[in-house]
Image 1 (cartoon, rainbow, N blue to C red):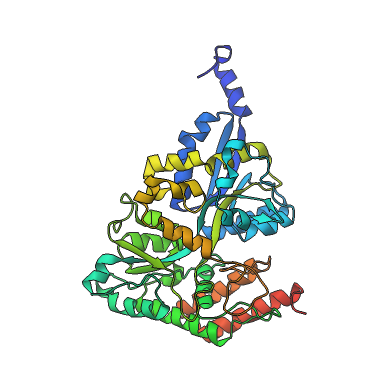
Image 2 (cartoon, rainbow, N blue to C red):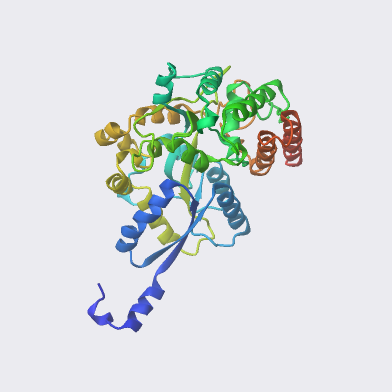
Length: 434
């Protein structure tokens, strides 16, 4: 509605120019596409003085662009989607605006404590969680029943391999298992690190010596490469979360081990062909359950270089609020609301009824322990990553080598030897090794 005093086109143009632009760097996945859609119909209409400019990127590109922007202080973005790896480190360095002074109706105490702690440094919160995830096993109940198979509540990797062998039917485009193969510290390495943890491995010993050539790593990565070659889809070395989500929801995978956030997507009948037949179990273990399921939050943060920090904070509070969760429930159904962030969501009877995985996912999030991620002692924190600044670089190098082994470009031993050298070199240069 144009005020009577401002009825000319020239005046409207001046008002449009006066709007504050908030540029948001975010992840390309269904939850974030939904956020963009709902923002246009709600937040921007309620806040005509704020214009949202979306930069939607694939996971590896998002991380690269966000890191470059914040380390160069360029101020390209006002809101960044980052995670539990970046938030404490960037907060410590003074690169993020603290998430203090939130409006009373935001109800910060309602946000799951695990999520708050993971996004804080020294007691100060530096990002608000959009969703929180662990990892779990998804499977097709109909395919299991047809073969007379039963998925345990807590499977081992040996059992997963046996199921995959029995359920693969490549002639009919049916693959026993889909797993991340796309190179990246947050793509294939997020999954394979939990696999290595389950096989009793670790990234570094207590003196910061890289352990990628250890028997545990070799056994875990050989298992992974062999499993994908025998029972995975073609081109597995190029598949990340989004690609495997498409395969699983399209009925091509008998099993998929990945982020718990996918549960809401797979149970959404509008987007998933298997909504009525998908089952779930814990992420597999092998010699230990320690570190077998990860802990991650995709969260919204404000870089100190933001040109519009107040408008950015207003948007972030709205996007991570109880009201936003209710808007998603109205638009997509309760099973599809952002999970893992608010206690009130898990207490909501409508969510409990629509999301049979709800209590299971919350338990997975609350039992993942970044301070004790391995059967052997480690000098770092983080379940599926090593919580040091250098990991982003050497984790990506290792991911490229392992993806190369999946693609048949090198042997597992060659991939791990190269990765071990890169990891060792990085921590030596950074002064971790004494």
